[in-house]
Image (cartoon, rainbow, N blue to C red; front, side):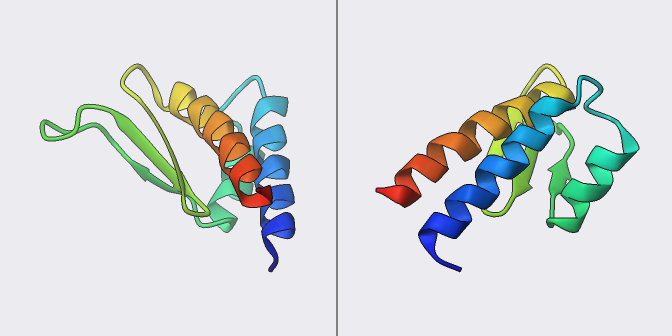
Length: 84
């Protein structure tokens, strides 16, 4: 997969996340899990939600939903870097 294709894929996933107001919607979570999403709950060592999808991380201390929104922002920034 070329960098341009990877960038487009990241943008599509970010748009998918943005399209759902309910970030815990089953269809959204199923699609992201199919993309290899991992979620790490807060712990005493790392007190924030961490979400990794396609090598991009989003995190937030407040909620998993906010971590998904932060992932979408990070994915768009990473897509720009991939395109050079």
